Image (cartoon, rainbow, N blue to C red):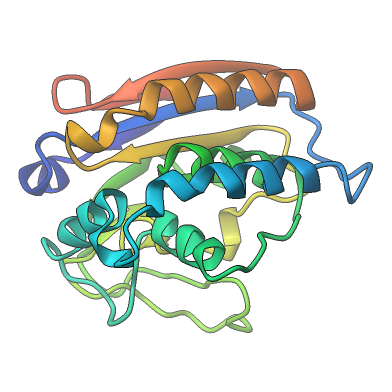
Amino acid sequence: MKKFILKQDFLDIFPEAQIGVLVCRGIDNHVKDENKYEGWLRECEKLSAEHTANPEFTSNPVVRGWRDAFYKFKTKKGARCSIEALLKRVAKGNQIGTIIPLVDIYNGISLKYGVPIGGEDIDKFEGDMRLTIAEGGEDFVTYGSEGKSEPPAEGEVIYRDDFGAVCRCWNWREAERTMLTEDTVNAFMIIEAHNAESAANMDDALEELKSMIESELGGTVTKHLAKADCPEVVIEE
């Protein structure tokens, strides 16, 4: 059995945090048409403008809220929430490129609802997945680092399994080891909120993400919510 667990050290810092979880089984994530999701991404880029309506980018609620959340724990200099990075790119007039179906789908949902979304390959997990505070020194090799481990600092919020860190600075950089690929069949998808206000769009985003994965990629998708009074989710029996 594999679980996703919100550890108490994380909840001590973010007692109102909510993590929406989708467990996807038997999906087909192969690229069959490289241009299939371009229209989807362009539409979602337009919709994302509501999240950056204030010309002072960092004053927009989505960006400001996550900036303030990141101030509550140890971060690598320059680390930002994944949704800030997406919104900033679009606000500067740049497009989000297509990658693989599941990533294209969740990038669009992330822009549309202004929420950070991530995904990992369940079959590559070693033991339980935990959202916790780093002890420092956990193995972490990110994409493009040519195999060099760049461990989190003590005090960072990280996702980790028994092998090492899976995502640093909460949702800033992910490990190459567990990343989604075309060959991913079983995926662990998450939508994150650091407090009640940031969770306002979560359920709608989670439902649309679930629906799109089922209709576009097949398989079965189950929805869960991890929070302080229900900190564990079974992701594999």
